[in-house]
Image 1: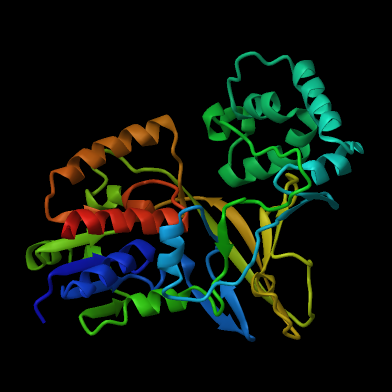
Image 2 (image 1 turned 90 degrees about the horizontal axis):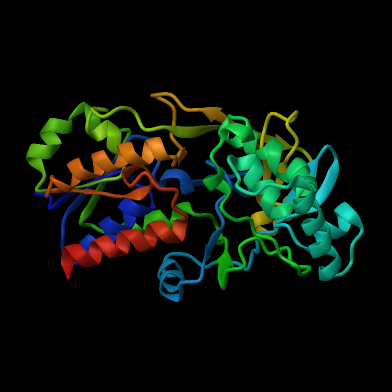
Length: 368
Protein backbone atom coordinates (compact mmCIF):
# COMPACT_ATOMS: atom_id res chain seq x y z
CA UNK A 1 0.00 0.00 0.00
CA UNK A 2 1.20 3.51 -0.81
CA UNK A 3 0.68 5.53 2.34
CA UNK A 4 -0.14 9.21 2.62
CA UNK A 5 0.94 9.43 6.26
CA UNK A 6 3.18 7.75 8.78
CA UNK A 7 1.94 8.29 12.34
CA UNK A 8 4.57 7.64 15.02
CA UNK A 9 2.83 6.64 18.22
CA UNK A 10 -0.68 5.28 18.83
CA UNK A 11 -1.63 7.51 21.75
CA UNK A 12 -4.56 9.91 21.56
CA UNK A 13 -2.90 12.54 19.35
CA UNK A 14 -1.68 10.08 16.72
CA UNK A 15 -4.88 8.05 16.78
CA UNK A 16 -7.17 11.06 16.39
CA UNK A 17 -5.08 12.23 13.44
CA UNK A 18 -5.05 8.76 11.83
CA UNK A 19 -8.82 8.43 12.27
CA UNK A 20 -9.54 11.85 10.76
CA UNK A 21 -7.11 11.29 7.87
CA UNK A 22 -8.69 7.91 7.03
CA UNK A 23 -12.15 9.52 7.04
CA UNK A 24 -10.84 11.75 4.27
CA UNK A 25 -9.67 8.76 2.23
CA UNK A 26 -6.00 8.96 3.26
CA UNK A 27 -3.95 5.82 3.79
CA UNK A 28 -2.12 5.78 7.11
CA UNK A 29 0.60 3.63 8.63
CA UNK A 30 0.79 3.79 12.45
CA UNK A 31 3.89 2.51 14.21
CA UNK A 32 4.06 2.00 17.96
CA UNK A 33 7.15 1.07 19.99
CA UNK A 34 5.14 -0.58 22.78
CA UNK A 35 3.41 -3.94 22.44
CA UNK A 36 -0.04 -2.35 22.60
CA UNK A 37 -1.94 0.64 21.20
CA UNK A 38 -3.40 3.61 23.12
CA UNK A 39 -0.27 5.04 24.70
CA UNK A 40 -0.62 6.06 28.33
CA UNK A 41 -4.41 5.76 28.33
CA UNK A 42 -4.12 2.00 27.75
CA UNK A 43 -6.39 -0.07 29.97
CA UNK A 44 -6.37 -3.86 30.28
CA UNK A 45 -9.03 -6.11 31.75
CA UNK A 46 -7.77 -8.14 34.71
CA UNK A 47 -10.17 -10.09 36.94
CA UNK A 48 -13.03 -8.24 35.23
CA UNK A 49 -11.55 -4.88 36.25
CA UNK A 50 -10.29 -2.30 33.73
CA UNK A 51 -6.81 -1.48 34.98
CA UNK A 52 -5.26 1.87 34.03
CA UNK A 53 -1.77 0.59 33.21
CA UNK A 54 -0.07 4.00 33.31
CA UNK A 55 -1.85 5.76 36.15
CA UNK A 56 -5.29 7.21 36.72
CA UNK A 57 -6.95 8.77 33.69
CA UNK A 58 -10.18 10.67 34.32
CA UNK A 59 -11.69 12.40 31.32
CA UNK A 60 -12.88 15.93 32.04
CA UNK A 61 -13.55 19.00 29.94
CA UNK A 62 -15.71 22.10 29.65
CA UNK A 63 -15.58 21.81 25.86
CA UNK A 64 -18.87 20.37 24.61
CA UNK A 65 -17.46 19.68 21.12
CA UNK A 66 -14.61 17.55 22.51
CA UNK A 67 -16.94 15.76 24.93
CA UNK A 68 -19.29 14.85 22.08
CA UNK A 69 -16.32 13.81 19.94
CA UNK A 70 -14.90 11.32 22.46
CA UNK A 71 -18.38 9.95 23.16
CA UNK A 72 -18.49 8.70 19.57
CA UNK A 73 -16.04 5.99 20.58
CA UNK A 74 -17.27 4.95 24.03
CA UNK A 75 -20.10 5.40 26.47
CA UNK A 76 -18.96 7.28 29.58
CA UNK A 77 -20.20 6.79 33.13
CA UNK A 78 -20.79 9.60 35.63
CA UNK A 79 -17.60 9.13 37.68
CA UNK A 80 -16.62 12.32 39.52
CA UNK A 81 -13.00 12.58 40.63
CA UNK A 82 -12.94 13.09 44.40
CA UNK A 83 -9.47 12.07 45.58
CA UNK A 84 -8.53 12.05 49.24
CA UNK A 85 -5.23 12.75 50.95
CA UNK A 86 -3.70 10.44 53.53
CA UNK A 87 -1.24 12.28 55.79
CA UNK A 88 0.21 9.80 58.29
CA UNK A 89 -3.20 8.16 58.65
CA UNK A 90 -5.17 11.40 58.76
CA UNK A 91 -7.68 11.65 55.89
CA UNK A 92 -8.46 14.94 54.14
CA UNK A 93 -10.66 15.84 51.19
CA UNK A 94 -9.20 17.27 47.99
CA UNK A 95 -9.19 19.79 46.45
CA UNK A 96 -8.82 22.08 49.46
CA UNK A 97 -12.41 22.86 50.50
CA UNK A 98 -14.61 23.30 53.55
CA UNK A 99 -14.43 19.57 54.36
CA UNK A 100 -10.62 19.90 54.43
CA UNK A 101 -10.69 23.02 56.59
CA UNK A 102 -13.22 21.52 59.01
CA UNK A 103 -10.98 18.48 59.52
CA UNK A 104 -7.85 20.64 59.92
CA UNK A 105 -9.17 23.38 62.19
CA UNK A 106 -12.73 22.55 63.22
CA UNK A 107 -14.07 25.59 61.34
CA UNK A 108 -17.60 25.40 59.97
CA UNK A 109 -18.22 28.57 57.96
CA UNK A 110 -16.34 29.98 54.95
CA UNK A 111 -15.62 33.15 56.94
CA UNK A 112 -13.89 31.15 59.67
CA UNK A 113 -11.83 29.22 57.10
CA UNK A 114 -10.77 32.40 55.27
CA UNK A 115 -9.77 34.04 58.56
CA UNK A 116 -7.61 31.03 59.51
CA UNK A 117 -5.81 31.02 56.17
CA UNK A 118 -5.28 34.79 56.26
CA UNK A 119 -3.92 34.55 59.81
CA UNK A 120 -1.34 31.94 58.75
CA UNK A 121 -0.39 33.86 55.61
CA UNK A 122 0.16 37.01 57.65
CA UNK A 123 2.25 35.14 60.24
CA UNK A 124 4.51 33.81 57.46
CA UNK A 125 5.17 37.38 56.29
CA UNK A 126 6.15 36.45 52.73
CA UNK A 127 6.08 39.47 50.40
CA UNK A 128 7.79 38.11 47.30
CA UNK A 129 7.79 34.30 47.09
CA UNK A 130 11.21 33.08 45.92
CA UNK A 131 10.41 29.36 45.65
CA UNK A 132 7.56 26.87 45.66
CA UNK A 133 7.44 26.61 49.45
CA UNK A 134 7.05 30.35 49.93
CA UNK A 135 4.56 30.56 47.06
CA UNK A 136 2.36 27.81 48.54
CA UNK A 137 2.43 29.27 52.06
CA UNK A 138 1.59 32.72 50.71
CA UNK A 139 -1.49 31.21 49.04
CA UNK A 140 -2.87 28.74 51.62
CA UNK A 141 -0.93 29.13 54.86
CA UNK A 142 1.38 26.78 56.73
CA UNK A 143 -0.96 23.97 57.89
CA UNK A 144 -2.21 23.04 54.42
CA UNK A 145 1.30 23.40 53.02
CA UNK A 146 2.95 21.17 55.64
CA UNK A 147 0.35 18.38 55.55
CA UNK A 148 -1.00 18.35 52.01
CA UNK A 149 1.55 19.97 49.69
CA UNK A 150 5.16 19.72 50.87
CA UNK A 151 5.75 15.95 51.05
CA UNK A 152 3.69 15.11 47.95
CA UNK A 153 5.32 17.82 45.83
CA UNK A 154 8.87 16.95 46.88
CA UNK A 155 8.27 13.29 46.02
CA UNK A 156 6.67 14.20 42.72
CA UNK A 157 9.50 16.45 41.56
CA UNK A 158 12.42 14.80 43.35
CA UNK A 159 13.58 18.14 44.78
CA UNK A 160 13.10 20.14 47.95
CA UNK A 161 10.23 22.62 47.74
CA UNK A 162 12.69 25.40 48.54
CA UNK A 163 14.64 24.42 45.40
CA UNK A 164 11.60 24.42 43.10
CA UNK A 165 10.58 27.60 41.28
CA UNK A 166 7.56 29.49 42.61
CA UNK A 167 5.78 29.44 39.24
CA UNK A 168 5.05 25.69 39.51
CA UNK A 169 2.30 26.64 41.98
CA UNK A 170 1.04 29.92 40.57
CA UNK A 171 -2.33 29.24 42.11
CA UNK A 172 -3.89 26.50 44.20
CA UNK A 173 -7.57 25.53 44.04
CA UNK A 174 -9.12 26.69 47.32
CA UNK A 175 -12.89 26.33 47.59
CA UNK A 176 -14.99 27.71 50.38
CA UNK A 177 -17.77 25.21 49.71
CA UNK A 178 -18.31 21.60 50.82
CA UNK A 179 -17.53 20.29 47.32
CA UNK A 180 -15.10 17.41 46.71
CA UNK A 181 -15.37 17.47 42.90
CA UNK A 182 -11.70 17.85 41.94
CA UNK A 183 -12.07 19.13 38.40
CA UNK A 184 -15.38 20.99 38.56
CA UNK A 185 -15.67 20.64 34.77
CA UNK A 186 -19.08 20.40 33.12
CA UNK A 187 -18.30 17.04 31.48
CA UNK A 188 -16.54 14.28 33.39
CA UNK A 189 -16.45 10.50 33.43
CA UNK A 190 -14.72 7.21 32.65
CA UNK A 191 -15.43 5.15 29.51
CA UNK A 192 -17.45 2.08 30.47
CA UNK A 193 -15.17 -0.81 29.53
CA UNK A 194 -11.93 1.18 29.64
CA UNK A 195 -10.00 3.53 27.36
CA UNK A 196 -8.35 1.06 24.97
CA UNK A 197 -11.61 0.60 23.02
CA UNK A 198 -11.52 4.31 22.05
CA UNK A 199 -8.23 3.96 20.22
CA UNK A 200 -9.21 0.55 18.79
CA UNK A 201 -12.21 2.18 17.13
CA UNK A 202 -10.16 5.15 15.92
CA UNK A 203 -7.68 2.81 14.24
CA UNK A 204 -10.19 0.28 12.87
CA UNK A 205 -10.40 1.67 9.33
CA UNK A 206 -9.24 -0.48 6.40
CA UNK A 207 -7.12 2.51 5.38
CA UNK A 208 -5.06 2.30 8.61
CA UNK A 209 -2.32 -0.27 9.22
CA UNK A 210 -0.85 -0.60 12.71
CA UNK A 211 2.53 -2.12 13.55
CA UNK A 212 3.44 -2.71 17.20
CA UNK A 213 6.93 -2.95 18.72
CA UNK A 214 8.33 -0.79 15.93
CA UNK A 215 10.93 1.80 16.90
CA UNK A 216 10.89 4.85 14.62
CA UNK A 217 14.56 5.54 15.27
CA UNK A 218 15.72 2.17 13.95
CA UNK A 219 14.61 3.26 10.46
CA UNK A 220 14.27 7.02 10.81
CA UNK A 221 16.05 8.01 7.58
CA UNK A 222 14.10 5.44 5.55
CA UNK A 223 10.80 6.68 6.97
CA UNK A 224 11.67 10.30 6.19
CA UNK A 225 12.38 9.37 2.56
CA UNK A 226 9.54 6.91 2.14
CA UNK A 227 6.55 8.81 3.58
CA UNK A 228 5.31 12.12 2.15
CA UNK A 229 3.99 13.24 5.58
CA UNK A 230 4.90 12.15 9.10
CA UNK A 231 3.01 12.81 12.32
CA UNK A 232 5.52 12.37 15.15
CA UNK A 233 4.41 12.12 18.78
CA UNK A 234 7.68 11.06 20.41
CA UNK A 235 10.24 13.20 22.22
CA UNK A 236 11.12 16.22 20.10
CA UNK A 237 14.73 16.37 21.38
CA UNK A 238 15.29 12.73 20.44
CA UNK A 239 14.02 13.41 16.91
CA UNK A 240 16.81 15.97 16.51
CA UNK A 241 19.47 13.73 18.13
CA UNK A 242 19.56 15.87 21.29
CA UNK A 243 21.66 18.47 19.44
CA UNK A 244 20.73 21.28 21.85
CA UNK A 245 20.80 19.01 24.91
CA UNK A 246 18.35 16.65 26.60
CA UNK A 247 15.00 17.95 27.76
CA UNK A 248 14.13 16.84 31.28
CA UNK A 249 11.14 14.76 32.31
CA UNK A 250 9.87 12.99 35.38
CA UNK A 251 9.24 9.28 35.15
CA UNK A 252 7.04 6.89 37.10
CA UNK A 253 7.08 3.29 38.25
CA UNK A 254 3.87 1.36 38.86
CA UNK A 255 3.41 -1.54 41.27
CA UNK A 256 0.10 -3.28 40.53
CA UNK A 257 -1.26 -5.85 42.99
CA UNK A 258 -4.31 -8.13 42.78
CA UNK A 259 -5.92 -8.45 46.22
CA UNK A 260 -8.31 -11.17 47.34
CA UNK A 261 -10.70 -8.69 48.92
CA UNK A 262 -13.61 -6.61 47.67
CA UNK A 263 -12.52 -3.15 48.70
CA UNK A 264 -9.05 -1.93 49.69
CA UNK A 265 -9.29 1.82 50.27
CA UNK A 266 -12.87 2.86 49.50
CA UNK A 267 -11.87 5.41 46.86
CA UNK A 268 -10.41 5.41 43.35
CA UNK A 269 -7.47 7.69 44.22
CA UNK A 270 -5.72 8.26 47.55
CA UNK A 271 -2.75 10.63 47.63
CA UNK A 272 -0.05 10.01 50.25
CA UNK A 273 1.16 13.47 51.19
CA UNK A 274 3.76 12.67 53.86
CA UNK A 275 7.45 12.52 52.96
CA UNK A 276 8.04 9.07 54.48
CA UNK A 277 5.71 7.07 52.20
CA UNK A 278 7.75 6.39 49.03
CA UNK A 279 4.79 6.44 46.61
CA UNK A 280 2.61 9.46 45.83
CA UNK A 281 -0.71 7.69 45.46
CA UNK A 282 -2.62 4.43 45.34
CA UNK A 283 -5.22 3.86 42.63
CA UNK A 284 -7.99 1.29 43.20
CA UNK A 285 -9.18 0.70 39.66
CA UNK A 286 -12.59 -0.88 40.25
CA UNK A 287 -13.95 2.33 41.80
CA UNK A 288 -13.61 4.15 38.45
CA UNK A 289 -16.47 2.00 37.18
CA UNK A 290 -18.27 1.37 40.49
CA UNK A 291 -17.16 -2.26 40.38
CA UNK A 292 -18.59 -5.05 42.53
CA UNK A 293 -16.06 -7.76 41.61
CA UNK A 294 -15.03 -10.13 44.44
CA UNK A 295 -11.37 -9.07 44.07
CA UNK A 296 -9.74 -5.69 43.75
CA UNK A 297 -6.62 -4.34 42.03
CA UNK A 298 -4.49 -1.50 43.32
CA UNK A 299 -1.55 0.35 41.77
CA UNK A 300 1.07 2.21 43.77
CA UNK A 301 2.65 5.09 41.85
CA UNK A 302 6.31 5.89 42.51
CA UNK A 303 7.83 9.03 40.96
CA UNK A 304 11.41 8.68 39.79
CA UNK A 305 14.16 10.62 38.11
CA UNK A 306 14.03 10.21 34.34
CA UNK A 307 17.04 9.10 32.31
CA UNK A 308 17.34 8.16 28.65
CA UNK A 309 15.66 4.83 28.08
CA UNK A 310 13.02 5.43 30.77
CA UNK A 311 9.44 6.28 29.91
CA UNK A 312 8.98 10.07 30.03
CA UNK A 313 5.67 10.90 31.74
CA UNK A 314 5.66 14.63 32.21
CA UNK A 315 7.96 17.46 31.19
CA UNK A 316 9.80 19.67 33.64
CA UNK A 317 8.66 22.99 32.22
CA UNK A 318 11.13 25.22 34.01
CA UNK A 319 12.84 28.16 32.34
CA UNK A 320 15.92 26.22 31.20
CA UNK A 321 13.92 23.40 29.58
CA UNK A 322 11.38 25.73 27.99
CA UNK A 323 14.17 27.73 26.37
CA UNK A 324 15.73 24.52 25.03
CA UNK A 325 12.34 23.41 23.70
CA UNK A 326 11.95 26.69 21.82
CA UNK A 327 15.14 25.92 19.93
CA UNK A 328 13.87 22.45 19.03
CA UNK A 329 10.53 23.97 18.01
CA UNK A 330 12.35 26.28 15.59
CA UNK A 331 14.02 23.24 13.99
CA UNK A 332 10.65 21.49 13.79
CA UNK A 333 9.12 24.48 12.01
CA UNK A 334 11.74 24.09 9.29
CA UNK A 335 10.51 20.56 8.47
CA UNK A 336 7.39 21.07 6.33
CA UNK A 337 6.69 17.34 6.03
CA UNK A 338 6.75 16.50 9.75
CA UNK A 339 4.00 17.39 12.23
CA UNK A 340 5.01 17.30 15.90
CA UNK A 341 2.26 16.64 18.43
CA UNK A 342 1.24 15.21 21.77
CA UNK A 343 2.79 15.62 25.18
CA UNK A 344 6.30 14.67 24.08
CA UNK A 345 6.29 16.29 20.66
CA UNK A 346 5.09 19.59 22.14
CA UNK A 347 6.89 19.21 25.51
CA UNK A 348 3.69 20.16 27.32
CA UNK A 349 1.66 18.62 30.12
CA UNK A 350 -1.55 18.02 28.18
CA UNK A 351 -4.67 16.46 29.68
CA UNK A 352 -6.63 14.08 27.43
CA UNK A 353 -9.16 16.66 26.25
CA UNK A 354 -6.31 19.04 25.42
CA UNK A 355 -4.56 16.36 23.35
CA UNK A 356 -7.75 15.74 21.38
CA UNK A 357 -8.23 19.48 20.88
CA UNK A 358 -4.64 19.92 19.69
CA UNK A 359 -4.96 16.97 17.28
CA UNK A 360 -8.23 18.29 15.83
CA UNK A 361 -6.62 21.72 15.36
CA UNK A 362 -3.81 20.09 13.36
CA UNK A 363 -6.38 18.12 11.34
CA UNK A 364 -8.24 21.34 10.51
CA UNK A 365 -5.02 23.02 9.39
CA UNK A 366 -4.00 19.98 7.35
CA UNK A 367 -7.25 19.25 5.52
CA UNK A 368 -9.40 22.39 5.52
